[in-house]
Length: 217
Image (cartoon, rainbow, N blue to C red; front, side, top):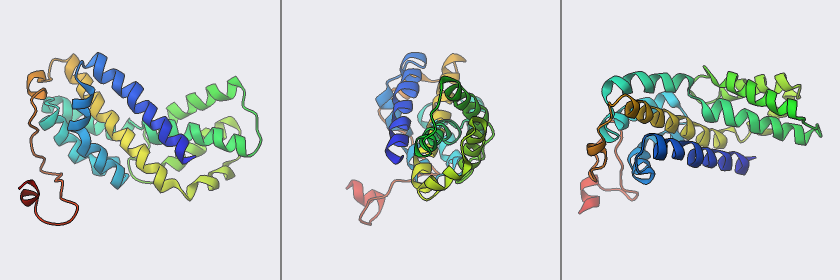
């Protein structure tokens, strides 16, 4: 279950986000990944889209060079309804997992119901740790699967939530970049510069103590 979710999130990250960044926004995906690393790190550790929002806003404006007008609209909206991992990928994987455990055969109709209900359930899921279980029960109920199957995955929910939240937060960053590029509110020249602006809400620290300045010496 853990491996399945992390592989699904990785595929979504590479195929969906990578395609949007490379072919729609037309920027170097590796440079983009380097610039948004603080967003992924905070989302992965806090498991909260709302806690990641201040860092996301700073990264979007200071490192991705997206206008504040676009960032202030897309980022808060994304933290509320952009739940690719928590409301989309996770409920679908749990539904298939529960069906396999209980020996229930899924037909094409079931898979279509899983996709549709997961999309609907993903809108409006709270951006805090835990509510993915609620959206998952919606998907299980729509397909007629036993809700008791949720008990099989609740014990490892924290581990799964790390990947789910990282995918959600990254999706908000990608959306901001794509919208800004389409609206011509993206400074491509500044984005391509090697130096990144320091972030007020995120500071990387050396692993074994000491100041940041000392770690550079």
